[in-house]
Image (cartoon, rainbow, N blue to C red; front, side):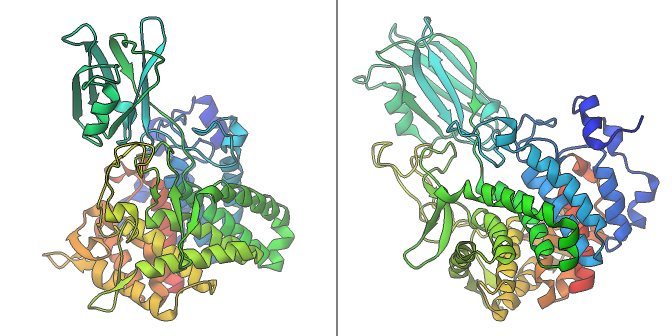
Length: 525
C-alpha cells in the first residue's frame, strides 16, 4: 500500500515516529555539498515524510505537533526554497512541488477550517495562538457567575496555572500564578472584589503591571462576588499575524509573479496562478485594518489596541511589517496594481528612514522602529481606556539592534523592493551587503568562520545563529563574499536535518538555506 504524505499523516493520526526523520548514511556531514541540487532534493523528500511544518497542518497549536506558527516559520521556508530552486535550475519540477504544498496550505486557512480569530471572524488566512498570544482565565463564584478576568501577556501563557485560595478575611481571596515555561510565579494575597477597597483586585493588579507575567485584570461581575477556590488553566485566544501571512504568502505570490511573467509558464500554470493570486489578495486584505502611514508617507503595521498581544496598540517590529511587505512587492510586480505598489514604496520609505550609516559605510538598524511607542517607551495614564496598551500598560524603551535572523527578512524585502524600482538605490544595496560582510561576518579566536548576532556586530553567535546566515543571500549580487562566508559557515558547522534535533523545528528553514546556497552559487557566488 503506497501512501502519500497527507494520507500517511491521517493514518498515523498526525504523529510521525522519530525514525521517519532518520538520515541515511548518504547524508553524513562529511559528504554534504550545500551547493548541490541533490542535497536539496534528498532533504526535500525527507521532509515530506513528516515532521513539524507539514503543509496540511494548521498554523495554530491544534496541528499534529502542537506548535503554533509552523506554517509561517517552517513550511514558508520550504515554499521559498522551491521558488529559489526553480530560479536556479529553471526546472518546473520545483513549481509542481510547490503547487502540491500550496494547495494543502490553502486548505488549512481559517475560512476553510471554519475556525475563528479572537474577534470571532473566520478569515482566509492562518491564525496562531499559544505561545504567542495573551492567555485568559475567568474566575467564577460557586454558582458559576463570572467574577474576574485575568490576562497574561507574557508568551507561553498556557503554561501558567492559576490557583485561587481563601484570604485571611472572609471578603478576600489569594491568587497564585505559576508559569513552568519561564519559571516565574506571582502571588497576590487578600484581594477584594469591592471597587472601594484598597485591595480591589483590578486596581492592585493594574498598579503592579506589567510585572513578571505581564498580568492585567478586568472586573466582569455584576456585584462584589467571591471567586470559588481551586486550580484553573490559562487559555490563549487566536490572532492572525501580519508577519505570518507575509511569510506564508510571499513564495505563493512569487509563483504568481513568475508565471505571469513567462509565456511558457502561463500555458502550463495559468489556472493555478489565477487561483493563487486570489488567495494572496484575500490573505493580505485581512491586515488592511492594521496598516498605517506616517505624515511623511512611511508605511507600517500596528497591533490594534485590545488585540490579545503583549504590545497591543503599538507598532509592529520592523521585520514584521516588512514580512508582509515581501508579498506586496510580488503582488505589485505580478499585477501592476497601484495600491500594492504604493504600499511597497511607503514601507520602503519607512525602512529607509530607519537605516543608519556606520563608520564602515554599512547600515545598522533597530528591531523596533525608532520613534515608535516601544522604542521610546510609554507609561500608564491611570486608566486602561487611555493607556497605549491594554495588556502592557507600561513598556519600553526597547532599543536593541536587529538580530540577523529577523534582519534577513528586512534585507529580502529591501532587495525585492529595489528590483521592483519601488524604493532604495544601488548604494543602499551595497551598504546592506556591507552590513553582512563587515558587521555580521567574522572569524573566531581560532580563525574559523563565525557570525555575530546583530546587524551592528555585537557578540559572536552560536551555530544556531550561523545556520540562518544564507537567508541574507539576496544581497550577494552586491558582494559575492556573502555567499562565500555563508558556505564556509555551513561547511564548518555541517547542519543536517537531524543535527541537534533541528528536524523537530528547523528543517524547513534548512531547506530554504540550502536552496539559497544553490541560488547564490549561480547569481552571486
